[in-house]
Length: 422
Image: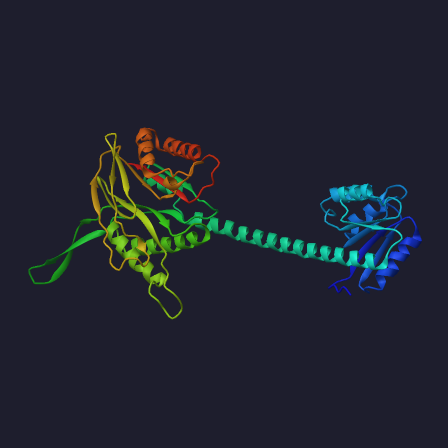
């Protein structure tokens, strides 16, 4: 006996009422969970099947108005009914060529009349198992589709949040009039991001002892306003990388804007310390240590010089038409590979028109059709070629160059390239 979790609907088409009854009576002896629908021809069969979507169809071949094979063709052409198993049951068209014709139309089985009870029940049970398996598969597909839709919707909303954390174009334009940012997440959200803040001048006091021996504070000027810009590549991409960018953004705001740490090298040391504390990079009772981290390049721009430091990132500078590389530290921020780390700070006087480029590894790692990476050397040479263009044109040329290189290849990593002309 075939047991099902719900009542199976079997649609039977035959222009002879006695044949309809014979099939129903045989199948009733097998299970009480069958619900039969009888129709006299193929035309009504199509209408009922499209409206009811039965679990199984058993149809005669030769019927008035529309025959069984013609009805099968219509049902198989309709996505809503294309997966319904259909058995052709006939006593007239029963040759091997007829069998081939029925199968080509979309039937999955063929029964000759007069009907053999054992053959009918075996074939029906088999087809209902097939129908049930398809329904479960379809339900799974629908569940997966719903879950996928929910996940994508959530990630798209996360993209809005991540984008809101990035400095706005107007903010950057006001502080850095000539710049471009080429930012292409591999997925909806990104493990690469950029960060900016502008510090305000703060008073500088010196201590002075007056004639009475009293200590007083005397205003001795103000600190220089600084424009601090960073390009960051967090471990991973997609959602995991995006979570890391949220952490990095928060820590940078705490370090620079709340703790008033403005020198790039000091920012790197503090960021490394705080990230390790945040991610618990030592083994704990709660679980294994987390080795994730980030690479970054950070510059602090003054009136006539910049301070720069890099963690596994380098700075490219174009001055008087020549591109030079200032190398950063070999150590990343966070991670568990190194017990001690050293970061260096570079002080660079600049002249009007000097250009500084910072980038993550996404652009240089992009593959072409021959599975070749773009490489750092090519990017240097290309920037050398285009550096005289205005910054927005440089961004466009970089995009076009990247597209020409990768062709139809998928993007393999988040891409971030930033250029600033001072």
